[in-house]
Image (cartoon, rainbow, N blue to C red):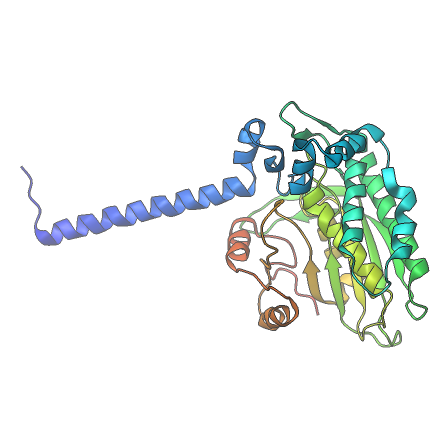
Amino acid sequence: MVSLSPLAFNFVLKIIIIIILIIIIILLILIIFLFWINLPFVILEPFLPLNMGAGTGGQTGDHFARMENEDSADSKLRKNLRDQGNYGRWDNLEMELMVADAGEFYESIAYFHVENLVRIALAQNGQPDPYGNIRQAGRLSMTKSGLDTVDYILTTISFITRQAASQMIVEYYVSNNERVMQGSPSIPYVRTYANVSNVVVILPAKDRNVTSPAVLISAHYDSVVHSPGASDNGGMVGVALEMMRVLSNREPFDFPLIFLFDDAEEGGLMGADAFAFTDPLAATVAVHINLDSAGGWGRAMLNQLGPNNAWLAQAYKRSVLYPYGTVTVQDIVCFLFSSPPFACGRLTPV
């Protein structure tokens, strides 16, 4: 029988504890990664309720869950959305914008945009499976639903432009991009894209003759293939469009304000890549606020701030009624995926 001295026993015990801790850390990283790619939701999707469908933000959201599950006027509206096969209330778009107070943000108008974006997705594909989850119902890049979404955004911008304050000149354009993306040394890859369509809107500074660093507000308009993307990212597109309407009716800022509705985010951040590396406006960006959703519920959270931006955290704290944020998500994303261009310091604007 082999006996260990107390010193040797303590050493072996420490080695065992270290190995167990390493295994636990690896398992935690694996779990975080699996949930990041939504594998558990994909496997369990047939057994989950409607508002727990697969996809990052691919859930149709609590609102549509209630609409499907309740025998109510909402449920009838939900059925009408599927049956119409068209843009539904598009004809009311200008009226919705006209009746609103020019300088006030209306949640109802932002939600109105979400409804129309969901209609666009459902018009192309939209039938629920037997479990109530919607499959093949996305606003997909470079397809009819994606092009219809660009058309809807441009139609909204056109209405906003006509109603903008006299001193505000709203400029906008669509950029069709192609590029070869290359990964970082830690995550090497090569990816090619073409016909990626970004919608860019510029609210110029008060003094148009002075070149000032700009603030960029972005929201991707595409969704994953199996979801109409009410949460990810229709909600944020609706918020951005309503912000644009309100700000275009106020005095111009001392700096330009850029709104970017980027394409093909779900396919690998292609629209964001196209703006960052091919659009001349990217070089003027001093602050980038990206509006995105990672689910259909929970608190709004600041989860990526970029390096050396403590002053932005302070501005966020002063400006937001209920500020809430964490650096954990940013650290994990940057470590595992090398993240988007503006998030982890790979692209440093002026």
